[in-house]
Structures are given as C-alpha cells and as structure tokens.
Length: 458
Image (tube, rainbow, N blue to C red; front, side, top):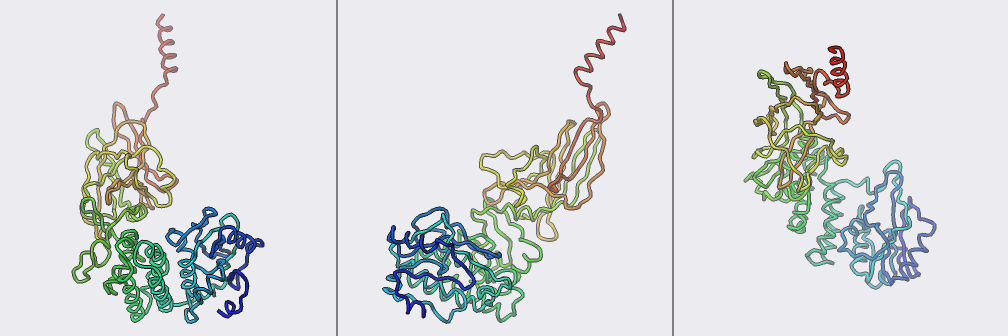
C-alpha cells in the first residue's frame, strides 16, 4: 500500500521478495497493455523449487474475464495493473489478512477492468518456494485461513451479484481454499478448532454453494461441504478419518443412481439431502479400482468340465445386478493404468455373464462376488475383469492379484487334454491362460508323414 501511495507511473506491478521476472517481462506486458488497451495483463507464471502454479490459463495470448473458468484460479497480484484503474477505484490491500490479502485487490481490479489480457508465449514470472517452506501461505493455521477466505468471499459477493459469474469465481474458493480446510489433517485438530472450522465453512456453504456449484463438485468434497453445512462435526470427522484409513466408502447402487456411503447418508439425524452423496457425472474409475480386491482364485471341475472360480471384494452395495466378472481378450488401454480401471465408451460392448455369479455382503460394507466361469479347451490368454454400471456409466476394472496365492496349473480333458494356469502380468493383474497339452502337428509335417507312409506301403 505504501508503494501504491508513492507510485507515479502508468502501470504498477507486484513481485514477491523470493521471486524473479523474465528479462523481457515488463517490456512485453506494457506493450500488450498498450496494444490492447488492457487494464490488467496476466503474464505467464511458473513455479520453481516445488512451488505449484496453476497453468490452465496459459493456453494462448488472449483476452479473458472472470467468467472464464481458469482466471479465478490465478488470483495472485502478480499481474500488471493500469494505475489509473487502481486510483480511480481506490484499490488497496487489507493489512490484517495473513493469507490471501492480494485476492480482494485482484478480484476487484478484474471486476472493474475494461479488458484483461493474457501472455502465454513468454514466462514472465518465476514463483519460488522457499526450501524451508516458510512462505506465509504455508505457515498459516486453519482458523487464520478460514477467516481470510471468508473475507475474500464476502468482499467478492459485494462486487458480483449472485449468478453464474459469481459461481465462476467461487468455484475456485470451494475447490481450493475451503477444500484445504477439510483435508486429511482435519481429524487431528483439537475439538474446538474442528467445531469452528466446521461452522465457518458451513456458513459459506449455506450462503454461496449454489445448486450449480454443488452438482459440479465431486462427491468426496461435496459430502464434506454438506456435512459442514449441517453442522455435523462428528460425521465430518469420521468421513475424513475413515477415508484416510480405509479409502473411499462403497457406492450404494440404486437403479441408475449411485451414492457414496459416507457417514450421514440417509441419516435423519443429520438431515442432509442425499443429492450431496450422489455420483453426478464424475468418473469414479479410480475409486472402483481401489475398492476391488481379489480374495481368491481357484479351479472347480465336474467331470470333463472345468471352471475358474474368482472371489472378489468390491466397493459396491445395493443393486449389484449389473456386475459381471468375465475373462477378457486384449490389453487394457494405457489410460487405465493410473486409475486402475476405465469408464467404457457409450457404444462399447459389455461381455455377457458366463456361468454363475453370486453376491453377499462383505464385513467391511462392500460386496463379495463369486464367479464360476466355464473354461473352453482352446489356446487363449485372457484377463479377469469386473464390469459394473455406476450412475448410468459402465466401468471395466482389471483384477489385481496383490500377492494372493495363485492356484496350481491344472490339466483337464482326456481325448484332447488341455492345461490351465493363473498368472500375474507385468501390471499386477490376474490373467488366465489355457492351451493344448500336446501341440497339434503342423500341416507341413503331417503331409510329409502321410507321404512317407504311402511310400513305405508301395
């Protein structure tokens, strides 16, 4: 603020004491502002020494507004501001905010600006994370961060009327600042701090978490916001602690709908609309993969018929009738490697159920599926996969062996004996291989032997 009082130039620019600029940064940004008559210019920023900087805004040199999805995720004051704009509206920084004090200034400048331009083809700013992580952003406690984000959001609400434009800005605060208050460390806070954080977040959810924002938020964060809104401190603490320890809860399948069974789900005492627990358009491949665990694999023989018996623990409950465990030909796409599963394209065929499949409740809240899959006497190598429909989408989950013992290879059949084996592939997934026990004679060799036999008879 003191620097703003002393400034005399046409533009002002702010830089952190640990950070540095590209050599041509100021020259390029001023030229951009003059050429485009821009009141604010956002030069490309990158992080160094492990500092995270959101990059999606920098997709090209262009003009943007706060309505653009990415600008609200770039609200630091490290931008070029036309000083005429700053002085006309008396823009200054609040001096009692330990975190985010640049946001009220930046947001109001962007609201008031005639034009906001982005430079993406040159790195203007290098943001440095200190080696001891002593930047003030990393040191502030939960209550300080809560008080600051509350002031930011109240200030923004006074500038922008309720509606899609305000939602575009607040999407950032729900996805970023408020989410960080309800992460893994929340259960470790003392009870009074948990209560205050829950109440503060809940008040902001009541005031600004519109239906549009709610439905566009992933179910994990949405449930946490909803529990805070209801003042359900104990359920909120349990939801986070249990997910820390055991992973995501199972999905309750109910026709074409699916719900994440977090604490408080359909609990009248909590009174939270089940919409907060519903899977709404998001992909849940990773959560389905994490909830799928091989319990056992074996063979079951009746006469000359042999079946593969696979027993899985799955992270689904309720209507599990869509579930199929099948032997699938071909490799999974590489895009499925990180989540461990994939959502199938709408027109992708799903295998039909072969053999039998039974379901029973698992002790940990999921479902145990047992499939008996008949094996054909042929040469094949197929992966064991679970297929299931969740919230109107079909998912394919390859089964990981995760150290479970594999059954011994088995021979079956007499006239045409075959061998079956269960193995783990290089990605840790269960594969079933069948092949003839004796290789068939090649066509050339067989013809040669027949020719030699006829020669001997002559």
